[in-house]
Length: 173
Image (cartoon, rainbow, N blue to C red; front, side):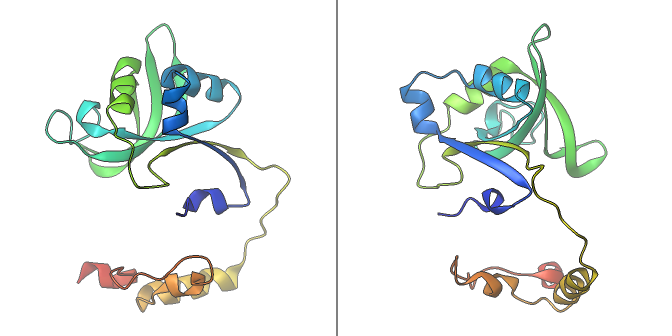
């Protein structure tokens, strides 16, 4: 399986399996806080049924990712980013959540047949890399979006194309 964000040269990405965490009795909250103390962000898949900031809270079990960037030990809160629906609509927003909710949401996720969902990822900036803005690439990407090109075909050498995917403006049809 592919862990898509691990392929970005501007990020340093380290992963550990959910199974290894559980077998070694590594507490997810301690793991997240220790990673944050080392200037890393933590991406983890959680069961949204246990997360008050998610629309699935106490309604349905849905496994989805959250990204954590901070914490407050006194308040027992984690701070993160996720796609959230609230009074202002749906979008990528900051949230705070009780550490116990995250622990429960982590522990209730079953081991799945998904490389992506079974791994906890720590991410930090790769300061050894530099990206120079490429205007031509931006133009091509906009053109592909407007014409609904199947851009996954560009990566068939590393990942099979999926005929079920929809691209660009075609997603609104």
